Length: 266
Image (tube, rainbow, N blue to C red):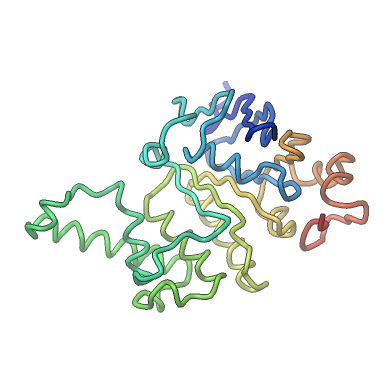
């Protein structure tokens, strides 16, 4: 018997006024897989992430995570179930240090409330020390440990994206959504990101990513979903997607040879 999907998106639709952002989109993500979502700007990729993570509610359709319907649940409740994400536009606390930003990511796993924290009870001090230790380990994993004491606002964009990943990992998610994680990274940083993604999968994490860097996508993804004007036009392994006529026409461009760095602009 085939293993049940970790995430199942079924006939999900959403419209903003008369504009159909997504129309009957269906796909699944297997446990331990890396799946990518690609498509032209405005295809509905980030909107889909907002629906999965609870920032938007679909007009129709179902989103099932680990056997539970999650469509329409608030974002904090979805996060508590084990879904973490990064954002296309980086969202950090610029006035906090790099380490403190990652510590915020442990919030759903903490027991201390406002009163117990204010009283500085022994167990709350132990918990804070454990949070700090785990957060620092996440920074080491993404290569930012040396910047732990630096204000997050001082980081260049590429490192802010890595910091967002570290903060998401601090929540110990089952499913990690990465929204354009390579945007703003140079070639060396992108290669490092690819290694991080593959390492996370080797550790048992399931990943769903939106990415415009096609070299990175083809390297790390086992399956790719292609959206165009809010509709799913193709799904399959990278090699099949590279040769799919409708994908080439809508997104990759007729001069695509399978090894380009980014998709055709347009």
